[in-house]
Image (cartoon, rainbow, N blue to C red; front, side, top):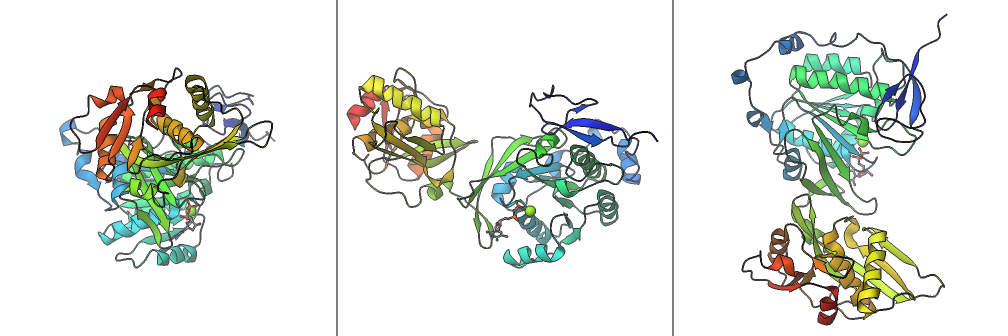
Length: 453
Ligand code: TYD
Ligand code: MG
């Protein structure tokens, strides 16, 4: 008997090869190839009937309906914004995120809103029983409309059910549990995930059903991650957040129907996800007043300015090697800024432990936070608090210069909106910002800043 044919796939990007390779030529990942049975070919297009055949006919450009008319707002403003203004008919949306972050909850809440608008929803779960879904739904409050539930992992069944019911929105929870019978590999493997997604793509485009696919971002060596699906779908959203914090950020990484600069902020409460309309307020909740080492700054999340608190604790070390940690920002950046302080201000921090934290559990990678980090470190070192209602932003260079940052105007506007009275910012940014109620103080070096303290 002939040996079953197998192929090798890269776990991270889905690159296919007939041989095992040490390094993936596609994504340059090492040791990422797994062996899987070869998928049977020639199965495409047989499952979806008439609608698909009609789709295959060419259409006149003038007859094609535009997406604007086919958008539906879910009335969850944070969700709509990330999608570019509502869900688009016939689009395929991937929602990725760590297990337990709230993807199923988000989908159910979207379903709840849409069903109240008399939209037909089919929610397919391969992870939970109908009772479990019902229990979660009960936590979210009463449903005005109704949604259809299906506990199923066989994608062929799901396809035929979808054809029969013809819902407006199909939700798949999660892609890693789905399988197609004619693919020999197990659910969650690269070939299953790929085949199932192309099946769902046909449903979305052929029937004009909006399909949401939930995908777990998995740890190394586990089942195929959603990354390999990114090129197949229209929109990729990632749902992120720190385990310890209750806020969640929904971020678009790819969007064929809108900008990828948008984020939505939610908070997980006991009765579901709540929109956070004012993230700045939320991030600064519980901030200490007049304490050395606490500095407010403003960062951009996508296109939204958001106030954050940077905290530093600098104290004499008890070890030969001073301890340094940075939470919520780059550790190397902090070391670099401390070196700048030592060299440019002649401060010796060599015998000091230094701990840095961006409060609220958010992660900031923006250089605009530099000046706030410097300010917090200095403020803690000198044990001298910044004035209340003061905020700081700017990039710090290696010679200790303070450089301009992008979208300074929006940052200042956000600070003003929240009642801040003094903004210390790069001199280069001051001129472009017109008259403001908030006092602007432009500085050009960290030395100038140290004098201010
Ligand atoms: P879930 O949506 O199941 O996560 P995912 O589908 O991404 O794996 O939600 C997971 C967590 O959210 C779970 O730990 C319980 C919590 N949760 C709440 O805090 N409040 C709620 O109302 C609900 C439904 C869940
Ligand atoms: Mg889930």
